[in-house]
Amino acid sequence: MPTHEFRLNHFHAMVIFALIISVAFGFLSRRSAYQRARYILWSFILFLLIGVGIGWAMYPFSH
Amino acid sequence: MSDEVPIAEATNAVPIARSASPDPVPASDRRRRDAFALTIAVAAWFLPGLGHALLKMWGRALVCFSTVALLVILGAGMRGNIFSRSGEDAFAKLGYLADLGAGSFYFVAQALETNGPDVSHANGDYGTRLLATAGVLNMLAALHAYEVTRARKA
Image (tube, rainbow over all chains, first blue to last red; front, side, top):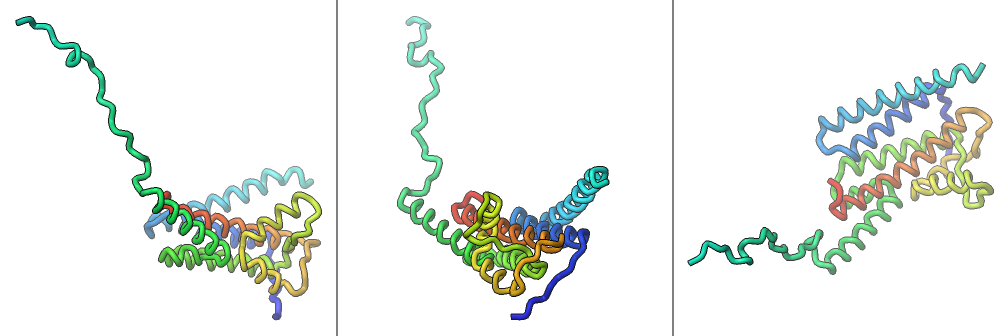
């Protein structure tokens, strides 16, 4: 079977991860479409904000 | 005739209610339901989304299947490490447990990753995390299907 190799940078990997997990969590934990959409959006934004925040918090230690 | 109230009527004793079982389902039905819930959980673990599909929760089934499949395809495509049973340290053993959580998709990941893992780059390291996430997410979905069957969750 041919293998497609994906080359993603850090940010793309984080965005894709956040999106997939947010959708899964939203569908598993909420019932109505509106609640799901709200949950997915919030979860996605928080994933990104916390990820970028942790990145910045680690920045001084990388130099 | 005196105004004295009889002792039995004067006390504020609350009548004791008959003990009500927290679960009104008979024991035999409960056992059958538990066995069914376990079957659903195993099905959900083996094929992501199958547990919810058997419960006719089509949206959740589709999302479970597609998210786990996406994570496995991406993880294998990024040449993440698929841990095997012969892990030497605790992390490798935990990684194996996490990867195995994806059920049959564990073998799909192995089949997709024909070039083997490459964790010398960050890409491969992210792939390893995505594969582990697929397994853990599938276990969470299986637990959800189990709880729904036992009527503990909506």
